[in-house]
Amino acid sequence: ANRIVSGIKPSGDLNIGGYGGALSQFIQLQQDYDCFFFIPDLHAITVPQPPDVLQRRTRDIAALYLAAGIDPGKSVLFLQSQVPAHAELGYLLQTLAVMGELGRMTQYKDKSDGKSSVSSALFTYPVLMAADVLLYRTTHVPVGDDQLQHLELARDLARRFNQRFGVELFLAPEPIIGMIGSRIMGLDDPSAKMSKSNPNTNSCVMLMDSPELIRRKFAKAVTDSEGIVRYDWESKPAVSNLVEIYAVFSGLSVEEIERRYDGKGYSSFKSELVDVVIEKLVPLQARYHEWIGSPELDRILKEGAQRAAAEAAPVLAEAKRAMGFASF
Ligand code: ATP
Ligand code: MG
Image 1 (cartoon, rainbow, N blue to C red):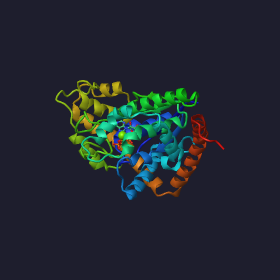
Image 2 (image 1 turned 180 degrees about the vertical axis):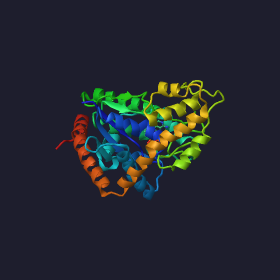
Image 3 (image 1 turned 180 degrees about the horizontal axis):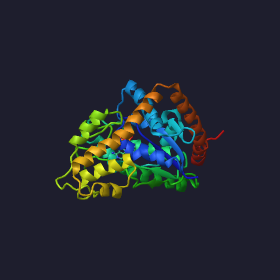
Image 4 (image 1 turned 45 degrees about the vertical axis):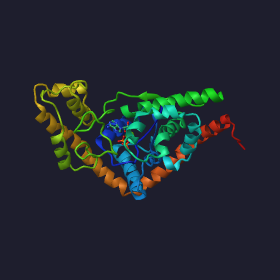
């Protein structure tokens, strides 16, 4: 069966970028794929996280996955730190990854830029991510634009491992890209991605924002002076970004949205955009509140970790055997 692994780091509160690029896609993909959705808490600590905040956010994101519609009967939902095979395979793969290729990762460059102290784990992050997907012999990985380079590395490491150790163990997973929502940019600056670890308050709409706040943020969102609702990232990035958000939250296609606002200006477009966002987020927030207070959440995560560990164990064992580790 075609299999997917993907996750959202508990490195900040979730915004509509993570909803478009991850959550909303997960919900669609779980219909057709065998899905492993995890919370990469080990990745979150590549930049310092206060332990109490990490703990709260991890549970928060789990509740949001469920609130958004991840079905734990269908998909496996778990925390990365509860399946030690991730860290173990991550280490093994570090012995195959070279400094030069990791130094070329643009996300590393962006995240380390201007910082006086950067953890070595931030540098090796893409190798752990490779372990995350290779461990489950994943066939497909849905990624936002920003993760494509990391997935390419995972594919390289899969092939390198198989070749060096003469096995057909790891699969080179294909990216699932170009789904609507894969690229949501800041509302104040359509050249910078909406990112949860960079929450300039006017740039991001958070999933837990109140309707009033959502309305205020979209009112301030930049557009252009043309007054035409058209999807064209080259010449109209700000408006295209809003159309993309509209598409994610309404389920309409870009063409349908363009047609709907043909001959109308930005003000009715923006105000109805706010309506479709609120219409999705208000019930999601209510379901979030139910999950976050429920011990059922912890039970689902615990069971998910057991299911994930059972899948990962034979693959890790085979990798270690191929590398020459004792197997008694
Ligand atoms: P951080 O800034 O800590 O890296 P993030 O907002 O980039 O946080 P991640 O946990 O790194 O979130 O990403 C989770 C998933 O959401 C990834 O698949 C990523 O591609 C996707 N994603 C994140 N931000 C966006 C965005 N603005 N538009 C579309 N997809 C996004
Ligand atoms: Mg990121």
